[in-house]
Image 1 (spheres, rainbow, N blue to C red):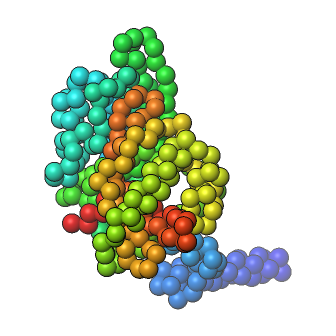
Image 2: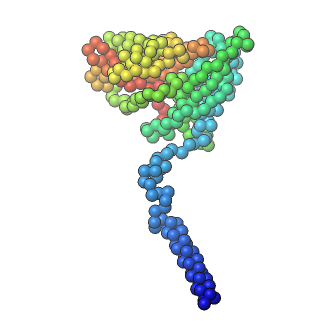
Image 3: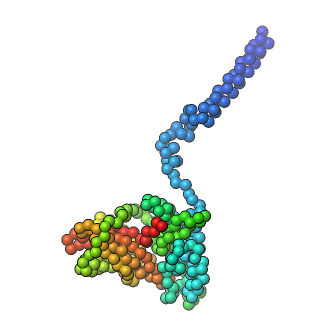
Length: 303
């Protein structure tokens, strides 16, 4: 009797193992051919979030970081060496010094640490990406090597693919450090441009000059006063000094709506080096008041 029960138990165990193996194999094949949903895809929200997460392009960030190290490394009187180091980064016909002038620079600079903070791809199909790079720099007094100071900067760098590497397509420019309440503005495509009367041009020049004086010295609330939505804007107060506007061009695309292009000459307060940056802004006139509605740094080049 006991022997019979033992044999029956062994048969039950044998067929149980066979059945488990068959079921397991069947489930594996069904998953393989996606005939049943896998546990990882059972949560559609999680799956969608995984699909939307952008991939990190290591070569882009490495290029931008390497460029930033060279761009923020200079020694007054040794500009030719700096230009040679930067030569391979620029697109053709770019300024070899990237908009910086060191004739009156009081401090030399080198980079200690750099990290890409943000990467954005332009929606215009140009393949250009805008990277914000954080750089920890050390400045040394040109007349006293023992006098040094640390300056943290955020540099905007626009790049696009060029064969197996990349090139910088616009003059880099400093941007304010990121804050928790950043509001992005969207720049619309330019419409048909019309020349404006001299009186309008003078008013625009006065307004833009006043804006840049406040943008480099005022509080976010004072800067926001120039914007149509009156939203506080973080400026470059304590980072650069406004010198003057150059190459101002004013066009009218609609009644009381104007496109303005110009170069801004700034002085880096930490080093006294000069920086020239191109800007495009959209202005609107309401009565005797002017307001800024959109602003963009740099020049678009999708070629």
